[in-house]
Image 1 (cartoon, helix red, strand yellow):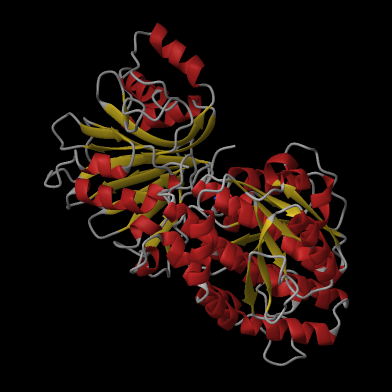
Image 2: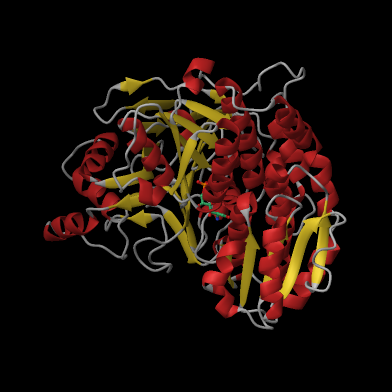
Length: 611
Ligand code: M6R
């Protein structure tokens, strides 16, 4: 959740660390701090509560120190105050550390260290670490040894970086859970929670594995296990264009990412659509046709928006591959002792590839014999490194905390996967397959067309910006899109919203309907249309204010809805990819009109690496 950066080299660390933190602010933004080691036996630690800009105002950009670590926080233990902001120091001021994760035994360690005369200044779990390192150093061991021994005392998960004022030529870092990446330079080296801050400086990176301890000096990087044995981790070249992680003229990352969806979908489909009708879908899977044929059951685990993608995936896989699919919240699955018969594939859907619950659920299933597949947007993330197979979504970096293009590309990948499994099992009708493939090819153009409807959606936003509740209704594969529309609105505008299957409305939510409740209705021309229409008539009869999304030319909501947007005609099973875009825009514009912080909504973080 939190963001970590580290630098050791020849340049001003203050400037580089601050730049790095700016690109990581999406990971947490309730306080931030930087520790610089000028090499005179002390640290200059600057911290501030609130957004990074508060820290920026306090830092001297001309500070000559060339070694430092920084942090942007998403509070777990202790309020988001300056005292609780990282870096944390030992009582003697000789050791500083930044940490992402949770030390579960910190109260016990704190008491033990206090009994030995050490003092604490914050409410955080993290502070136990530098205090422990400093305490061990007093026993005469080296910094590296003290760091290693302190890690051995910590229970929980961590990505951590640590400096010692009397040893100002190294950064020590370690990982067990949350990600940590090293960027390799010439006469300088970098450390960060993900690759984005590194890309301005280098494309050569090393992803630390759980249990790794890294030592960064100006001239090199060495990696050890916790017993001190040296390890060799591969250097990877990251292809991302750093410009893709900048706003490029848009007001917010979220807006840019919504508008990038035509391109993102094209990138996701590139080289994955068969040229000849007789060819199988060229998905980069290590599974043979026999493996796919023998799949008896699929479990999908995910959180938030990715879970909504999983619900659409269930619909597609069951229709096209006639294989039973269960979709679970990862946080529930991991603790419910799931029944995993032979022939089960677990699919973890995770944009970041770092969501702790999803990773744990996949691990749980793998330990019970399931084969594992990750659908992920981040190359080199934990999910892609631990799953047996990965399908990358190629959406490009998604910086806005509210997921948009990562979601639609997940849906595109799930369509291909459902077709691929269906092909292997012989359950896909060739005509239907051809129709879906053609539909996929047309998606980018349709998404462009829908993006151009933004002015109409702004009108909806203006009219409904002060509503206190919203209801979203859909059926079949559009039901998860109703859920997603409601989640987007909640996340960034803080308006209460519910998504429901349209047919379920009469079993409860109908009681909410009155002239003040906007009802966003998803009604493409599909086998559910007539039923959805009846449900909307029921809502209209109770004065519900319906905002409809329908297929081009459909006049069914005339006289019922307050306004209707007509969307291009596609195969109904691809409609989720189109119908979500106006909902993303609606949430975005309502949030902007309400003055909300769209890219960094309160209490949220992009990558949820804690339980
Ligand atoms: O990185 P993941 O896809 O695993 O993240 C899962 C959720 O935390 C994420 O989708 C969250 O719900 C977003 N804020 C949605 O916009």
